[in-house]
Image 1 (cartoon, helix red, strand yellow):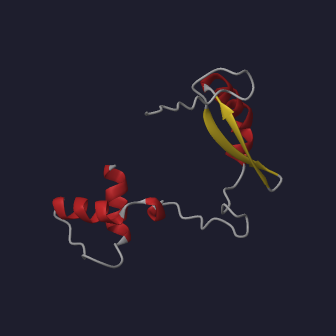
Image 2 (cartoon, one colour; image 1 turned 90 degrees about the horizontal axis):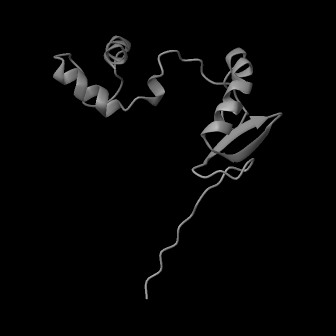
Length: 109
């Protein structure tokens, strides 16, 4: 006999369906709450001025974010190499990708 189990995530505030789990932190404590689109929008609107004025930190809070503006730490290096080769740029198979190539890739994407 087979069983199907469905998990329905509901909004923690009003019980509406189709909620997603949202994580946020305050005063060194991380919280999770399940919110549907309407309540998520309310939370985002309420936090927007504080997020815009704040600074990002490392997840564990023990050290500050690197402050890199190019976002290269989040880019798939393999995708950059493939794009660079297709664009006719010289790029090594391994190792560091030049800042100029990274800037060109980010501008194209």
